[in-house]
Length: 149
Image (cartoon, rainbow, N blue to C red; front, side):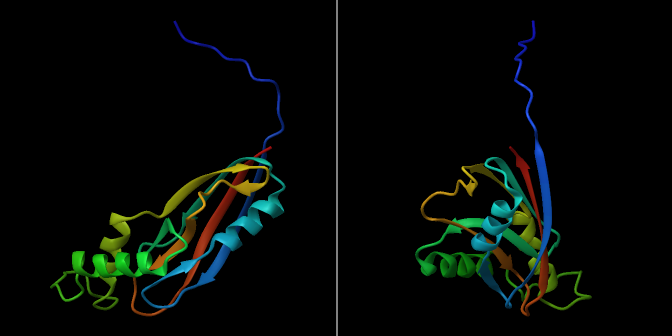
């Protein structure tokens, strides 16, 4: 027997924007204020914000936003975990490209964050970052999709 739940009719809003974000080489760029601005612009008070980074050599990360040492330790750990001096087969785009792909595969290219009262429901110490894994900066595209009421 299936459980059926009836919900009152609602008006669901969908709002989408692509942010073009320049990054510095091998660094974490805090983007929380930019994402929050899109949420505010959407007018959604209760819902969900879905983030999708349209790249395979950079990551999307929710992480500590108070102590920059956390970000440095993450970068140091990943440089040891996925070294650039390995003899990778894929090297067409340079020696930093395949390690960047591996780092992205180990992290994430999307995140989902609840929205309440028109604000992202991040924890006190959480921030949203684009993690550039290449040696040189790029302009990264982040799809921000907001849905709710």
